[in-house]
Amino acid sequence: MQILGTKKLSVLGPVQICLLLFWSAVGMASTESVVPSLSPTNIFAPASTPAKSIFGLSLFVLAVTGAIFVVVFILLAYVVVKFRKSARDDGREPAQVYGSNQVEVAWTVIPVLIVVALFMATARVIADIQKVSPSAKAVEIVAIGHQFWWEYRYPGLGVVTANELHVPVSDPVHPTATLIKLLSADTDHSFWVPRLAGKTDLIPNHPNSMWIDPQQTGLFLGQCAQYCGTQHAKMLLRVYVQSRDEFDRWIQQQRLPAFVNATASQGQRIFETTACINCHTVAGTVANGHFGPDLTHLMSRDTIAAGAAPNTPENLRLWIRNPDSIKPGSLMPAMQLDDQQLDSLTAYLETLR
Image 1 (cartoon, one colour):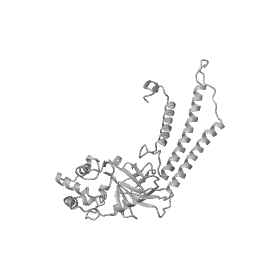
Image 2: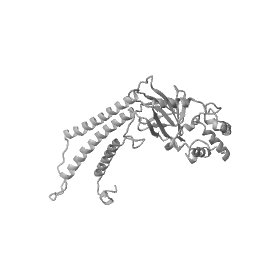
Image 3: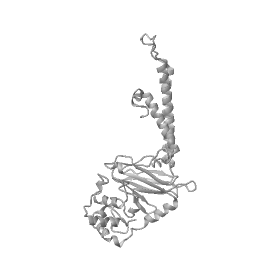
Image 4: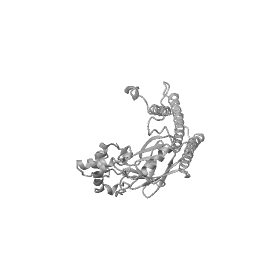
């Protein structure tokens, strides 16, 4: 916009501005195709079959609506030029045309055909995405949305974790789908990782499901796409797509009980004698709460507070002392511990790897 200048931009009409925005969007799409890894949430670089289907549908819809725009623009420009006011115009109203069957049929049939085509294309993509038959190789995960964090359970693998989802890559030699059952523990949430799949809602007492088959390794970001409370914007998603060997190693590590470290015994006693154990689970200890994330392997995660902050000792200590300083409105209470207790408890949590 700065290139055009304020004075020049002001003379552009609605049609010209729409055309400018349209070609800007096309240019962005072409740029994204050249640099597919520009953003972990880049919708122009799908990395899973459902996301590719949605992307293909979006290109089809853009092409159809773009064609409509071009035709309407050309006709409008033609009318403006052809029938502009001339010096010989006497100001009288021109002859009016009524009852043109051809015009009536054209502006009725053509829009109906366009809508039917878009509807059929959309219905086909929805059916293809929702119609999936689980295979023996599929990884099954239960994702539960909480205010304001994610719980992940791997029923067939005996693993429970939080906020950071790990799945195996699906390569052409070993195609592997990941089936995700979506549940809500409180209010409406929405699971959305743009490069892997479309938005799917988590509704209380109404199980939902989706599937992905990531075709490249790496970190894919997303978040809850449904307003679920004050910290909806910080209910983030991190999906780690790993090779099969790396995923298997991660599963084996997550199955292990918490590491017992004698040097952090004081912190463990504080953890087990405060309200921490009412909300959190640490495998191999008396802590078996289910209101908050499982902490058995807390330090194996890159972030805390559902991706709101890096998982560092400083942030962890701050999170325990005053959760609202990192995520205002979170449902985790401040523990009201003194500095010595905070240091001991933080040291204990750092051993949970």
